[in-house]
Image (cartoon, rainbow, N blue to C red; front, side):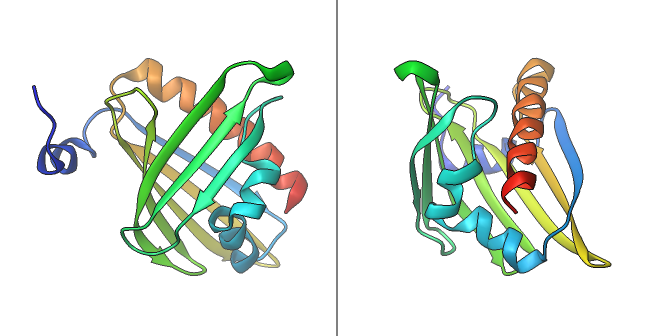
Length: 152
């Protein structure tokens, strides 16, 4: 089956859904900037011992981003990219997420909610092919948020 932009849009919300909530001792504006500037992404946007070797951001509706995460010792590079659909600083960001070579495109929604002196961040990702893919992403996002908490 050939995937068109229309079928991608129609199927993006289908499949398993992931939701992660996490509190940060940071402001919504600072967290929003961490997710939307290439320099910030290079500091924390990779799970475990992976490092970000490339981060590009064209922050506008319809603009694209690209992130490369490399395994230690010059190992495999994992490449993800997508496009921005909603940009509402500092409270909401919606973008697509697609691994290079994977036909499945998911959608990520981030909300930054003020809570006292900190922020509750809500990440929702939809459109997974199956529960296994959802589980892999849950592990990855949980590890990435640990790194984000150390930096912001």
